[in-house]
Image (cartoon, rainbow, N blue to C red; front, side, top):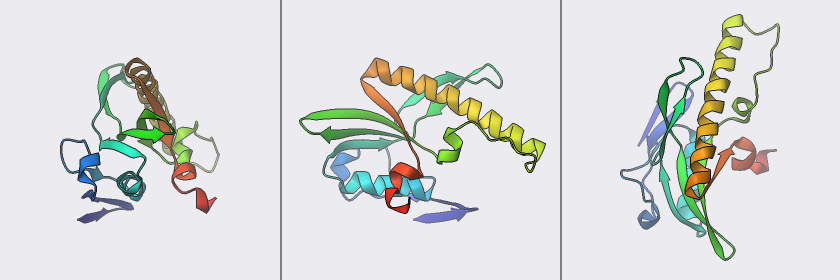
Length: 152
């Protein structure tokens, strides 16, 4: 089931290897990149378990200084050699993982929006890193560089 809204592909993913998916309900992807990652998890024999938006982490937003909830995109247990490694996985465009680049060509509103988004994401990722460290996970951010290395 695919729902196209704007430039983003959304829908429900039906895992073929249902026993590996440990989430509560059918996973919903919010982008073609998330769909690609879901398919990889479902097919990869080294993925032992995975789930979408299964971990919720509180974080303090630098915008309003209030506590909000961060739904991390995915969790994953991956067989790496003779050990199993637990990951918290966020999927983001590479551009959004770096501080915004200021340019005279950009509108002021665009620059402010990019800066606020980056600062909020940093707060989320700092909270996720702390949670991961306490709970035996590794927090990683996957971008198009990792998801689609053949397109470099």
